[in-house]
Structure formats: structure tokens, C-alpha cells
Length: 445
Image (cartoon, rainbow, N blue to C red; front, side, top):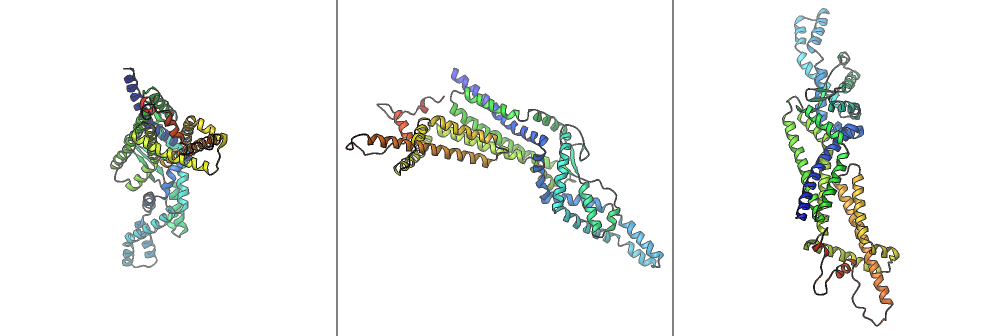
């Protein structure tokens, strides 16, 4: 009964840990977006080179400038001036009819100049500077306040394009289009985020910002408690690994569904391509972190499985240790001597293995913005270090056996090589009347 109670309690605690892991990813993301300007700028800076964002900015700036040029008034003024200087009324009327083609030609000229700016490094610098300045304003938005750089209108967050428009006006003047210099100050913006639930989002952001980096530590503590109280800790690690994997898959699925709902609710005036690019950029860290923890969960579950008594796990272990043992014996036969180091490694293999795994976990925990690739890298490096330790232990065992044979009568039996360290451990666990008894099959606490 006590064992069942511990198993049930462990399952509940580990389920809570997996839920906290999901919330931790979101909390760390919110904390980075709010507190770290460099992280925020690094997140949105690549958008300056996104074709959809460039097209959206070009459209907004071109429309803003072209709409301020009254071609009817320009052609009327030109026709009146020429009429006063002797131009016939019929020709003046024909001139007034050119306002439409002239307007179209001027808009095309303006668009070409704006595109040349938007596709240049100047625009990338302006975009980065504007977003860096806007970061403090974004914090105010998420805490319920407004600002001048980023506007909040209902549930819409807009980034002002004033500096980019001013640059385009100057470019037009430099190209000989003097009318651009007479255009009054233009107020245009591009939508960064639009949501009818912005107030609700602010509430969640405040909560997540408050817990910040504490939540991952709490999640780790809860996970450790769940494993500790489990009657079978190896299986608890397997359950924890797959639980984290499931939680992260839920988060990724939520991002996919949320993206679709968000884009479907945007008004027609918002460019879909730019909105997709902005959404994907803002949740990039969430998505990468989710996949990172998913891979970590799989690695954890796989490691716990390979340590267990299953036939497949035993077969894999024996194959690996047999190969490493052969490599160690070959090195010893080739004259490689491990000396006191090898003896010490062979005598302390268990603590050494646990220490290497713990250091790998700590390294990954301290890794700044880990990715699925970094998890696999740490796992591979840990496996390589463990393999080297196993080979060293096997070489030390071969050295001991060679030394023992050298101290006996040379006429003794010298057939059969030294066993690997894993094989020696298995031999110790054999009973006098039967096959090997793996301690993992009978007690796994």
C-alpha cells in the first residue's frame, strides 16, 4: 500500500513538474522580452531583411508620401501659369487632364526611391534603432501604459515610421523631386501586434514577469521531489522525460494554433505576410526552447531506459561495454599504461559516471539560449567521456591481470583474456546455481 501511495504521489508531482516546465518556457520568454533590450532587438532585427516586412513598409511609406502630393492642384497651377503666358485654353485643358498619368508616374518614382532605401543597410540601421528605442515603450504597453514610439490603439501595437519617411523625403529631394520637400510631416506606422485580448495578455505577462527565472528553478525542484519519492526512480525518470516531451509538444501545437487564429482575425488593412513574419520572430525563442526541452526529455527517458533491466537495454549495454573493454585491452596490449589513474577510475566508476552526467546537465542548464543541437552536443560529449572512462577502466583491469600472471609460474594457464570491467561486475552478480542476477531486475530505488 505504501509503495502504491508513493507511486501515485510521484505521478502527480511529476505531472505538476511537466506543467511548470511548460510555464517556465513562457515565463523566461516574457522576462527576456521585457528586461533584456539586446534580446528583444536581436529578435526583431532580422525582420528588416524580411521581404514581407520590406514590402509592407514600402507600401505604407509610398502611400504616405504620394497621398500628400495633390497632382490636380499642381497641374492646375501649371496650366494657369502657362495660360497667363500665352498658352491657348485648349492646350491648358489637355495639360490638366494629365494629372492622372502624372500622379501614377510620380507614385512609381516615389516607390522606387522608397524601395531602394528599404532594401539598403540604412533601413536596417533605422529599423534596429527604432526598435531599440521602442523597447522601453513595449514594456509600458505590456504593463498597461502608452508611449510615443509605439502606439496602442485598442488592441493594436504600431511602430511609427516617421524616421524612415523622413529619409525617403530627403532621398526624393536629392533626386531632384522638389515637391517632396514641401510635404508636411507624415504620421504613418506599421502594425507590430494586434489582439482584442491585449488587456488579458497584459495580466498574464505581469504574472509571468513576476515569477521570471524563479519558475524554472521551482520546476526543477518539483521534478526532483517527484523522482525522489518514486518507488522506482528509473521509471520516474522515464515518465518525467516523456512528460516533458508531451508538455513541449502541447506548447508547439498551441503556437501553431494561436498563429492561425491570430492571422485569421487580422483586418484586411494589415499585410498578412508582414504579420506572419513579426509573429514568427516574436515566438522564435518559445518555439526553439520547446523543441530543446522536448529533445532533453527524450534523452532523459532514453538514458533511464538504457540503465534498466529490459533485454534490449542489457543487450545494448553489453555490446557497448564489450567493445570498449576490447579497446581498453588492446591499448594495454599495445603498451599503453594507465597506472594509478586507471586503477582509481576503475575503483570509482559509479561516482565518476554520475559526476560526468551531473556536470553535463549543469553545463546545459547554464548554456545561454540552448537549442536542440546543444542538447545533442552535450549528450554526445557526455557519452564520449563515459566511453573513455570505461575504456580506461578496462585497460587498468587488463594491466592488473597481466601483472598477476607475471607473478605466477609461467607454466600456468594463460589461455583466455581478461574480462571487461562490465563483465567482471556481471560475474560478481552470478549465483552459484544459476545465471547472472542483475541487481536492476530486483531493486531499482
